[in-house]
Image 1 (cartoon, rainbow, N blue to C red):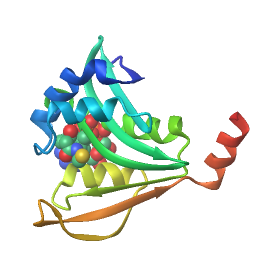
Image 2 (cartoon, rainbow, N blue to C red):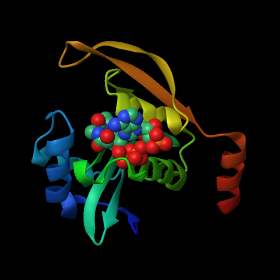
Image 3 (cartoon, helix red, strand yellow):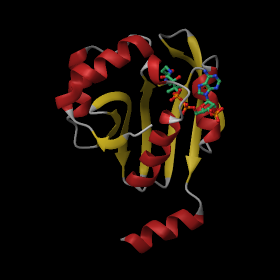
Image 4 (tube, helix red, strand yellow):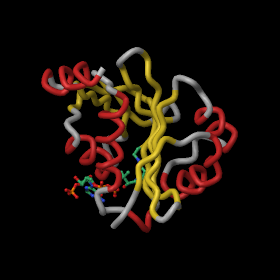
Length: 154
Ligand SMILES: CC(C)(COP(=O)(O)OP(=O)(O)OC[C@H]1O[C@@H](n2cnc3c(N)ncnc32)[C@H](O)[C@@H]1OP(=O)(O)O)[C@@H](O)C(=O)NCCC(=O)NCCS
């Protein structure tokens, strides 16, 4: 399948919101997504198939540390490796040295995706979701080899 991974901004908020509505527990309004997509500290990428957004990745960068906020793929496009490509591209293009996230331990697809990308479970955040459900914190660190490569690239 041919696809492009591109930086996204608030111009695609409608498409992001459509995917979020079918893929994620509704925590954010469209206004929240618009705000996030226009933040200067945001690092946001989308996967486009024939110019249509089919998956998105949202994160915040602080120095070389990435805080991953969400990743979602349209239900019709899952299990094709798109989220994995998106996540690994985001880690590479951002030149992050560390990345952290919270995930619902019951979300098998997401947990396995993050483990496949090299994240490790670091701890538990009690009552993280809606003050009720616990979350796992997971973290990733760039290897020395990938760090020196990105320094070499400038
Ligand atoms: C999690 C999600 C983004 C994965 O997207 P995807 O494009 O289908 O994932 P990929 O095809 O790239 O899969 C990469 C790896 O993730 C794991 N994985 C993905 N979907 C899985 C599933 N349904 N069951 C078990 N493992 C799964 C596998 O390890 C897979 O590697 P493999 O194909 O070699 O086995 C997608 O299921 C989704 O949008 N879910 C709803 C939103 C969500 O929960 N996001 C995470 C929290 S913000």
